[in-house]
Length: 212
Image 1 (cartoon, helix red, strand yellow):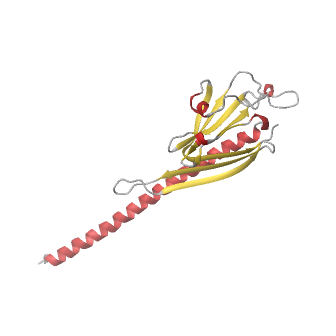
Image 2 (cartoon, rainbow, N blue to C red; image 1 turned 30 degrees about the horizontal axis):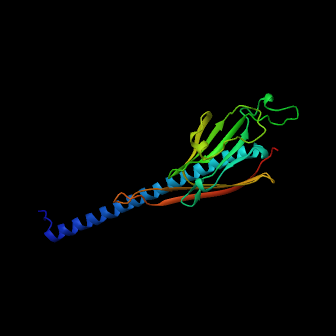
C-alpha cells in the first residue's frame, strides 16, 4: 500500500521546486540580457565600421582644395561635436568623360557627411549637384541650415543610427583629415521597464586626400 506524502514533505518538495524554478528563470534572464548586450554591441560595431569605410574611401579620392567643413557652437550637443564635411566626387568614376586629358577628375558632384542634432543622432551621407560643374571651388552656402533644409540635393543615406559624436579636424595645407566617431546605445530593460546596459564604440582615423 502506497504511503501519501506528509505535510512537511509536501512543503519541502514545493520549496525545492520553487527554488529550481527560480534558478532556471534567473539563468534565462541572464542569458537574454547577455544576448541583448551582444546584439547591441554587434549593431554598433557594424555601423561604426560601415561609416568609417565609406568615409575613408571618399575622402581619399576627393580634392584638397574643394573641402568644406561645418563646425562651431551650433554643431555642439551636450558637449559633443556634430560636425559636417563636404567633399568633391564624381558621379561616375569609371567614365572617361569624368577626366581631362591629364587624368584630373572633372568634379561634378559634392558629397556631404553630417551628424544630425537629435538624440540619438544619425550620421547621414547626402549628394548635391549644383550648377557649374566641373567644380573648381568648394560648395557655397555650407552651413547648419543647409544640412537640414537645402533643396535640390540628390540621394540621402543613413550610415549610423546611434551617433553620439562626429568630430572632424582638417589640415588643408597637408591635405589630411582626422575624424572621430562615437556611437552609443542602451540595450535591455530592468523588470521595471527601465533601459540598461549602455554600449559605446568609438574609433578615430587619419586620412590623406590624394587629389589637389
